Image (cartoon, rainbow, N blue to C red; front, side, top):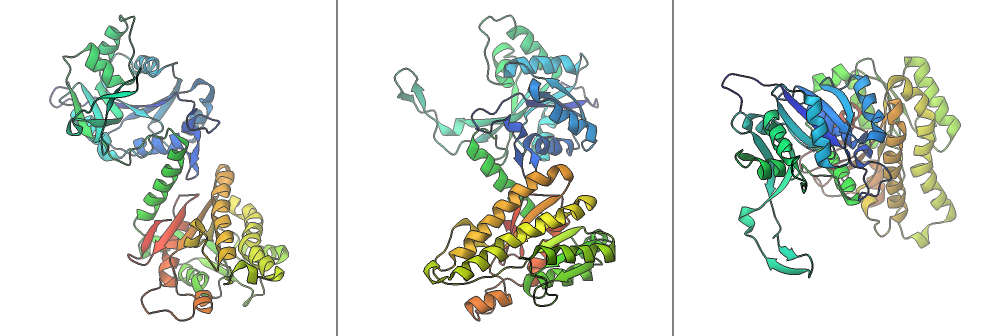
Length: 470
């Protein structure tokens, strides 16, 4: 244990030796992209941001070390100092990591690369616990009853009291001398096997008490394919929970920037254009009714973007709020109505994406789409609209991954029922107070444009006038 007043160097070791077989990703699971970045980068970013961590290095699957080397070269994570090949097993990887630490006493935290939601509180608690203990585990209570079985007969043999049980997480933290001593003793055991590092300490140095600090439900491990989906939704939640920017912050961020809005003559698009201009951006608003800009026509979209670039010298953000909502069962739709819905709600966004990309590459900008809550489940009498909005969500997510390498972000706003002329035309007048104000959606949209996230579907709800996950 550290002597009073002594501050030991604290090193976080990111364990990234897995190959993702169970996740079915066709690549190491730590390299799967969520919210526009590889999972391991989200994990590194979380650890790098913690004040209690001095240094980070990664123990990586040997055939994929280049991904981390690129992160080191980028300089985005100042505490990330190295990447080294991992071993065949978790324990082999820990031994190799201890060699990299050197002989000087330090605090070391071993953390799974596929736990990207670790927070600073957990990291800080681990570091502080090492002032009094040689080893620290992270765990949470089990909501499920845990049973013990006979593995040969598959028969239940015991039900341990749930109050005594916890589910282990990472990081696991140690004084380097304590974990090194445990592994030295384990190395002399020909039958040595352990699934984690605290088990090694418990078995081979039982004189070392292992403190347990509280983890969190969010600190999940991405192992199965469904975990990737859940993690993506958690990133949406965190994006949505982020506090909105102040007026001063919006003015500072939008000053000198150019915003192009398609569908800007009314409703949400008009509110975005008005707000962006109010905060100091150069705004170019286009629509079929006001400028004759039909987003189904590539030449019209191209001309609009060329005009904006010519007049302002740059295009930082492109917003598409144009859309049509035709009500009725599918049997009532004429061929022309089907064609128009698909062209305006899906082909138009595709054309805008293709034409806007060259400009957004120059500024590392963002493309923003809009969807509807009906995208998650088609509803009777506006299936055509729901289908095209579901496609818009898929387009957003795929483009965010395609364009991340060129620094262009793509997000999608999913507003709750909003007071717009399009909605009034479809549903008539609705009770006062039951609809979201277009201005509220505009503020959430601007804050999304000004954020670093990509691939997110951000729901904006009336109940608290803030962004929530779709």
